[in-house]
Image (cartoon, rainbow, N blue to C red; front, side):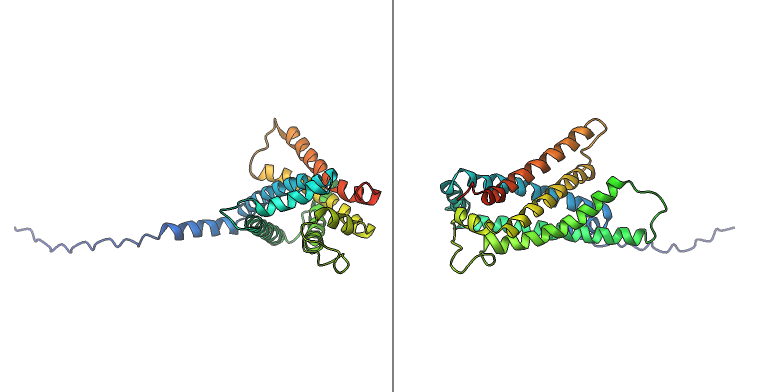
Length: 254
């Protein structure tokens, strides 16, 4: 008996999906990270670190005013001439400003979206007692953030552009010493600066510690050291910035 041989149908070739460009894959990965809660926390930590570094450097530069008009005014000129001749006058300063603006936008956007994600994930609060320390820290971060945004806008219009807080012709370009004394001689403005710096110091204290936690720098061994470091940074920034309006109000700077 002969075995019947059935025709074997050819196996269709496997169709491979086209390989996506690496750039598209990278963009999708970044978008996926941004959409996640941990991604937003990482963005907050990184942009916050950049802003903290700027705040410290800005404070050190501001303290030059305590040594007289020549040093602080020369420092203002230096900030606009650094990078020459490769860069034009003030170009590096504008690059830094743009980077800081991007960091502020990303930081604030991440905070808002993360808050909304937390509210959606937990629309009804758990029936547990929250620690007073955690509640105060959270409220301070939110209220302090609003105060800081208002202060940044006012500060840019005030001592950077001279658009508010000065009489016509009183604000002089690159005359930092004279502008600071004229701008902070008004006690309501000086008090607002002091209050804003208090909000900044509390924001730094809680924000730096949160960044350490998000990036995984804290351990059971170094928790106290990092907490102390956060307090020292916040206190140093507060005292450094507040020393300027206090010196103007006290008449130590004339």
